[in-house]
Length: 507
Picture (cartoon, rainbow, N blue to C red):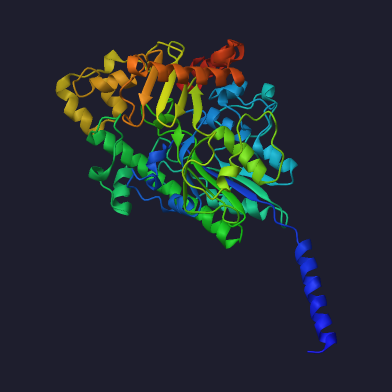
């Protein structure tokens, strides 16, 4: 090879290197796929459920499965508000309540992403349920611009007619070439009402009859409860199929590798002692995250992750500044560590709570909790019953077998609250809660034995109570500061919306 050819080769290499160096690195895309009312163990990747969720399992297998993912509140609107703002639900004023509003002073992810050059949008259920009155300062859903035009080609009872995947594809078609995107897929499954024949479809399609349905230990194991769970679990499978369609769109368009995909649920399964409760089944949710270009897959991480942590994580992944007002902490260091088990030693606990979820003015669900690797401590702010009793609907014990055959746990405690097979669940679901609860989640995973009055656990209770109260004061929880004015006004507002003249409870 002569000298001139060698020089030309070097020149070509130099030009190639220059072009390569000058090529811009594509900015990270973000997709949030969030289901409605689903506790973590409902997904087969966690090893308890036997229903097929292959697409969630794929995200967990090719990304990171978080074993301790927690929502901020076991209620739709405050939970979603926490995820969108990077704050604890109690920091969000009216946003701490379902059926109220999220003030515009709390900037949400779509606004921050759009300011950073992203196209942002959502389909189906974004933030909510709630309202956007003038005093909210908002003109669109806090989850961003809605893409809901395209409907499913066929309808199915209990399934949202909005075609999530088709609307996601339409959203992608609307972006500029090379523009990064943030998109929220607000799947409304498996929220009730479910199709009344879902249990039959679950058996026909997935081979799971009622005898195969698993029932958590805090629920009565009866044919009616199994049927109700099977109706719900069919929708979990359906939601997983829609997740598969989202994955395929990302793959077909060559976007999957550079997309941070977060798959979770807003709060626990819609059964008694789960949703609207701060026990584990109410606030512990499925969480799997994949990002093929940056995150090593095949990992299982035991760090505590709260919904408030997800917004700063997405912003940092996108190369955008994280507002100092966010109380959540980015977990990007955990994602990119390549490690399993406990990764960040500071993530050894988390908190959650609730203020109101539709109960009338004579009842209150208000509570806070703190959870560490073994124990959960709960403080209840009311001694009222958990549910209204209905003596007129009670049936004689001789009718119990018939009710158990067809009714869910609500029917059982309503119709037969004092039956020997039901009395324990009446205590759990209906009767007033003690001021404090403490559970050893290692030996009592269904949280049935309250240890709050156990002398042997007094030091543990005191430690967790002090830790929770310190965090509440640090983050200005009205329950700790005593400044309850906005919470009291908002509670009156949502009660009037539901039970006042023309309220939605009468519709």
